[in-house]
Length: 222
Image (cartoon, rainbow, N blue to C red):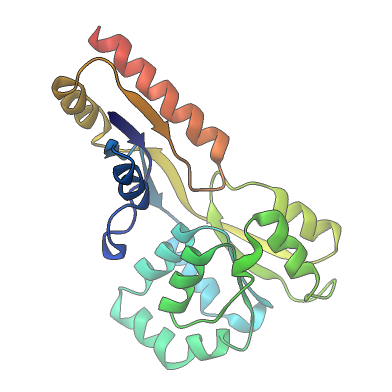
């Protein structure tokens, strides 16, 4: 039985996608087609802020993409050197709050120590931060996506904990989507099963985007 997964693939360095692997154990033949891609923006502004840890009380990450933005910045030799020589050590005197193991792992890759990875959601992370930060202290720097949820910023604001958000990526349709769908449907039988899997904070947006793209494609080929 065939399953079409419209989702982001797992990092290539992390082995097989867990959904494909798990479905295979139950006899399903799964194909993964990426629906969305990410455009990184404001990277100069991001590194400028990272260059002044004295202005902030810590960092907040709720998405692996925010860490990807930092890693892109650090590909430049001068920035990588500045990070390795002093910035990393200075940020390590401050907390780096994260949601989830995947984000925590990326925080460790840039040399920082994550806190709160077991929170499991932005709501729980906000509670975790509030239990450790004092009102009216230095702002926490929050690199995020254009479609971020407002739960965490709202909770911190209510508790008087300053948060400075910086949009460092935005979500767009994957450039190969139409071609990948055409190729898939030209080789498969008409009856198939669809899986819509989300793994970012903007669940509703992604679900509707996947569904609308698929319906639009099916109308165009029938």
